[in-house]
Image 1 (cartoon, rainbow, N blue to C red):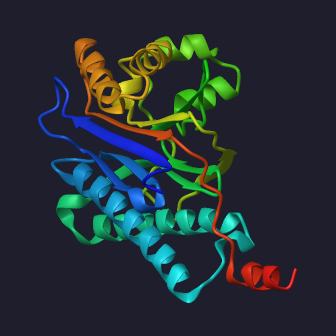
Image 2: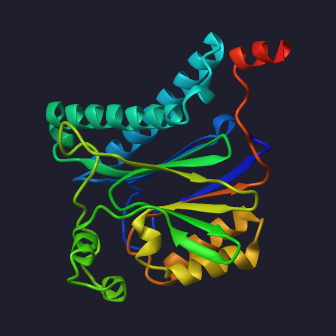
Length: 272
């Protein structure tokens, strides 16, 4: 997958915060990208986000390794990678919650998370909270995730328009996060991935400071130079105030990546 999907990461403390509570993890061999934005007193936020990212990356990697070793065919069900990713996030939630209950310095900690897993010419997206995932395809830039926030609920119920919500100062009240409760609902979806697609995973330190149109313009301007795009987005956030930690993951599909054929399919093809 390293030659099929390329990705870069960038994170910055910002102009106001004293330390960075965001965490980023990638596993290029399976095209997995994870970003978490922690919350909690002292350093508890960075503990929560760190646990989330490490747990998710490790569990998904291990699940893929087991399937490869045993010859299990992941093409047998397109939902299987989705289940692997969802279960990893649920496990991370349990670990964070247990840690917050047993470690006094971590009481009340939690984290948002957004993850992307590329498989079989598709992208699996999973998220909890208000960290986002966007896609730029051609000239169309769209948000693929829906914030788990009070503001988004008010928009859904017709109290705010999307334009009014964008100007609101009450953007950061999340209604769902990892570690806050013993269980959590993970939003998980699959989308077709196409050659040339750009995907942006980001914390609200970017989206609170930079308009969607400017994110799109930055990607369009610098194109395939993902490092420059990521650095420019962080710079824009800081120029506009940098009131929070800023984290960005960029992934670009450079070639198609159909799933490998399973052992049974290969055997049957010998007789076909």
